Figure 1 (cartoon, rainbow, N blue to C red):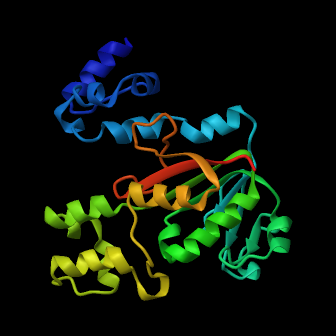
Figure 2 (cartoon, helix red, strand yellow; figure 1 turned 135 degrees about the vertical axis):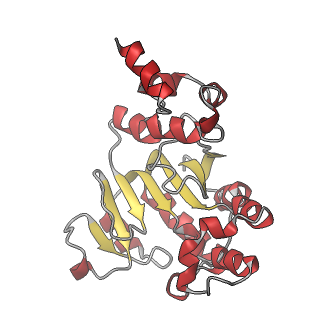
Amino acid sequence: MKKVIIKFLDKLGIIVFTRRTIKNYKVAQLERFHASLEGKGGFLKASANGGLKEKLLNQNRTSWLEIGCGGTFDDYFTYVDLFPETLVNKRGKYYRIDMVHATDAALQELGKFDLIRMQHVFEHFTPEAGRMVLDNCAKLLNEDGYILISTPDLRKYVGFYLSGQIRENYNWALKRIPKDSPDSFYFSIFSHSLPFEKHEWCYDAEGLIYQLESSGKFKNVREITLEDELANIPFTHNRPSEDVCVVAQLKAS
């Protein structure tokens, strides 16, 4: 009966997959199911995959820190940002700390974590400040703890710019520039963002890996693509069409 329903829905242009199928099939196999899925197989897999989140939960490693929470809160996370604590109703789960200049006392108060995540935050630090943040993150991780960083992907945005698609991916650029601005202005929004939350640096996977490896604090540094077994939307990639994601683990001291 289930197969009959699936065939009927397919005739209507509605494609149905079981979660098991999505997890077990490779991206190319998924995209061969239907022409409309071309280029979308990675999104399907990363949406169905438990990824790093599932791995940590299965290992009972549930002490997680989010740097730059932006006011969004999820289970298992402690949060750090620059909002005044009086504006965030999360006593015991939110701390106002400048991760660039954090004191050892402030870091000790936070405790130790199995995962530290920064989603679309690291690009807001200069490369020098970013290295200081990484050094402080290393002090906060448990043995073999993970650090996960996602940023806008320079390579993707160069591709958007050169192919004339840059306007399709940056509608919010209109908060700063007129709609009839040239494509170079839209690309500059990617580079510099808005005045109150400006980007200090641009990254691709190579750049993030370079920063992590150069710190000397981390091992197993690598990119997580949407096809990766650790990928999960939105846990690793919260803006999958535009970001790059890199993961590493703390080196033994």
